[in-house]
Image (cartoon, rainbow, N blue to C red; front, side, top):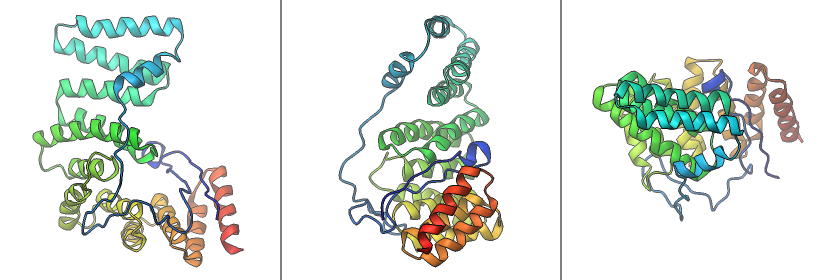
Length: 286
């Protein structure tokens, strides 16, 4: 079957979800696989690195001359600021510029994180980290995943120094290792998340990350078990329902895939998503 793909808004940002078909219904045998238990990673090549200068150069090439002047003034205000509060303010202003004027969310996240590092409060650090994590879960580019996860990792490590008992920060840090291509050993991430989930099996965030990790590694049965735990607690969790459908689809179980694609279709509000789900259901019924 030919590869299909479609993407919708992310649940984490707009109470929607990233909806996609990302591969063949039969998993590619050359794909990277690792186990929730053994932690082995058989990927051959590390992703190419992305750096801030590369992102800035590309972004600055897309803005108008007047926007460029405004940005230069904001950047200069960072270096002129001799008081920490002035620098924090300047970073927030640059962040808002990239979000509101230039529509560059990655740079908005970066400058928000720079302000958070100076503020060094748990609230600001975790907020900035979540910006990177939400983007990470939607990105399909290994190099960008690495950049997003690397930035989130620093913020979450700092947040955990302030409050080591924050389970969400521990899970987020685990997600950086699991999905961010920052380590050759995914067990680093799995261990962090499982410590929380083993202690509190009803932690939906942790169960979701482990389920997504199982799906990513081709362990569809394990992933389905965890997604079903989420749906038992949250019957209308459309993200979990869709992932259950796709796991069944990827493992070749058309009957169950149709059942859960139908459930997702009932819940989704986006017309394009309903249409794509209908198309997929019809294909599976052939």
